[in-house]
Image 1 (cartoon, rainbow, N blue to C red):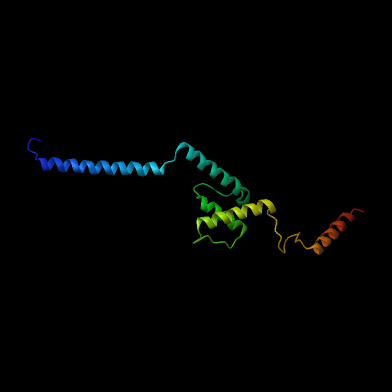
Image 2: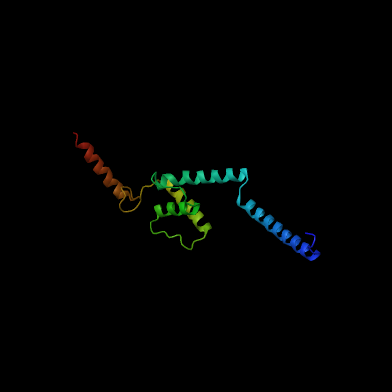
Length: 141
């Protein structure tokens, strides 16, 4: 070290400063990736709420493991609307569609109101159903 010139020592010092700055930046980046305890609790609560809202729709066989929030929401939407494609849709769109789908299914249940449904909302078909029901009940007489 005796033979080192001032320029050599300054070069080493500058290299160490760059390395230190690089490590500081790396630490800052890592801190951004990790959650505080409160943030972690909030994320866990959000995940549990998402699973609780989705599981009755997706069924017990659906595996939530490794699925992103968006993948789960798209699966729920696809359950209600088979032709749905989430490609190119914004997260805001998916979130709104998911919320509307869950609300609709929770308020109306899973029963169809289409032409294959026993209840179509048409009063004439209700009369027909009542007549069939009465005929079946009268079979005992």
